[in-house]
Image 1 (cartoon, rainbow, N blue to C red):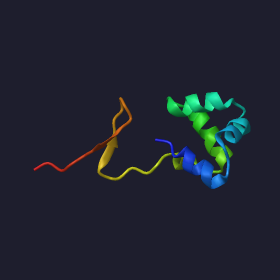
Image 2: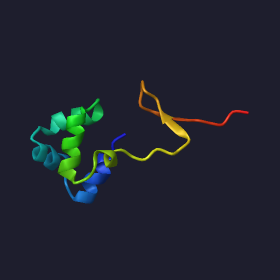
Image 3: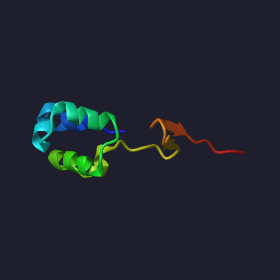
Image 4: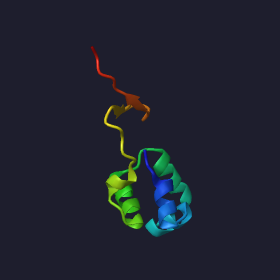
Length: 80
């Protein structure tokens, strides 16, 4: 879902740096990322990284959807 590790690497920041920049603990940041972050939290993370909220997410191939229950990508194949 989130490509935070890649963005942190590009910005030469650690998760600890990011958490401090948005005013939360590193544990709270980790919990948000691994759970279901609020729009406000996503916007704060994006602003701290200097990107749009959409850029926090990896692009999905056009033939996949994301399962709303588990978050895993599901390949959609054309039927006959």
